[in-house]
Image (cartoon, rainbow, N blue to C red; front, side, top):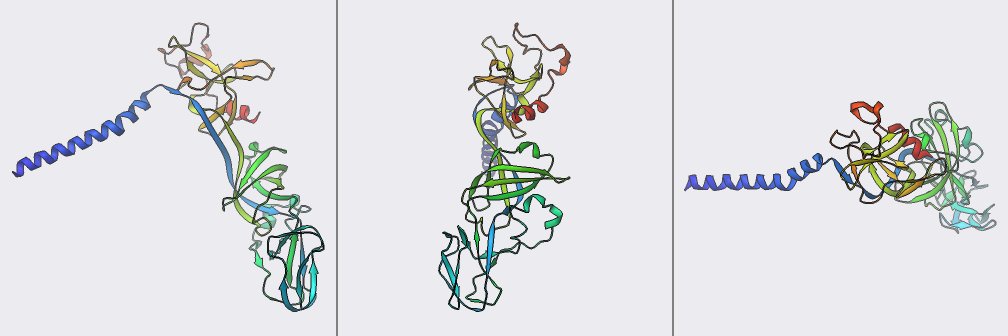
Length: 334
């Protein structure tokens, strides 16, 4: 009885193992051995995680004398010039300009302003305390900060971008800034300044962000490219006569080099134009489409030759055409 049970248990384990191999291992191995891939639509959001700082035009209001404080306007509310914000011991304080009321300050109002931000360096702000302090205490001593009015019509996000990433930024380029709390704003690169080891990148926006008047230093993701098109693995992209492209399977089983125009690339995949594009001379060029079958590895084996109307690149040798990694960044930038 015991021997029979052991045999049944062993058989069950073997069956489960075999089933696992059939379901999970074999398809993976088969896919890895398949020399081609069918391409389709995809989306790439390319961005950088950066330490950012908010610069804005803001005016602090301080108490002329001490007393109990009565607040008329809540934090974050937009007011017009002349609006009554609060009173201290009966003395009313009004907004001197249009803007958003904020009861938070950090002492950096004169450092991160539109007038001073272009001259900033990382060394200047190293060690500077930027934590927001709440001015709402119910009682104000003479000279104490009461509130501030922040101009929300245009404000700035600045960051020092390392040289290896700065090619993704150009003055006038549209970007999206994603904040840790899930909010985001559309912005535009307004200026790029060489700081030696990094580039001071200034982005401006007119959009609303709940923390724009309170926060100063903030970790954010800057989206420099968000586009859709034909998704192609970078490993499948090669070049011929200086033109990036892929090898597409033809009806007769051969593979023809097909030029592509890369819109964006994240290092692993690229988004390319579909059906056709125009080259630098304005010539219409046919390109890849949805459901095209392309070689995973553009180093074409001898059994997968180009069609008769394609002349092999003799200089490529046995290793096939040269990789197109350098062309990807250049083409995407265009």
